Length: 230
Image (cartoon, rainbow, N blue to C red; front, side, top):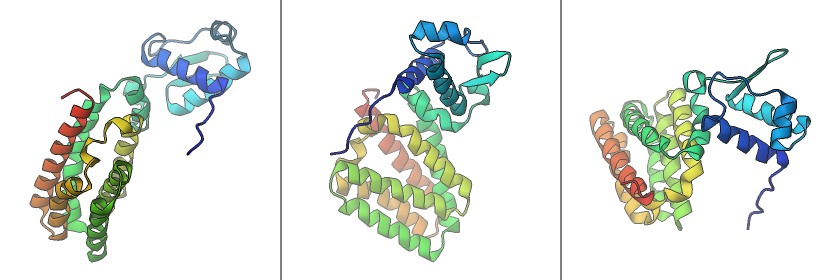
């Protein structure tokens, strides 16, 4: 069994501050109270507060100006997709928008992969697809499925698609255990994904796009049902 990480006081404070920012207790554009006042309010030292601030600055939620103060950043306007895992943890409502992007980007990636994939990449896709059907246990099936999509993104020849794919998968992580519906049966997971790999292997762009769209729509319905949304 994997040892669970122990939370430090900085971890707890970072989480509290993050939730207070995302919930609007500290509104976008506002300056946080002076450090001494804020530290006393949370019952921590100023050193602990500074460490938590540093993490939230790095995460894109705060910005600090020497001699001026610490302000809540307009992350919705200025932030990047790396904020998605944090936002999903705060509110699962983000999943609907993530799924929308997943469908459009995933279908485009499959089409581009069909047109750009090398012979070696097509062979790799077939091997990874077989691994989905051979996987034992829901976790292994889910991870094998992920590797097929990473390979599809690589096969486009565009590294940005790979980064976008990784970003979307990272966004799922906070709720991953609730999104296992499509992967409970390895044979069924293989059957859903097989038309996508077949179309890419055949070099048929329109067919790959259509197959990917069908796959993404089907798995989205199953995942949302598992979350009690559909």
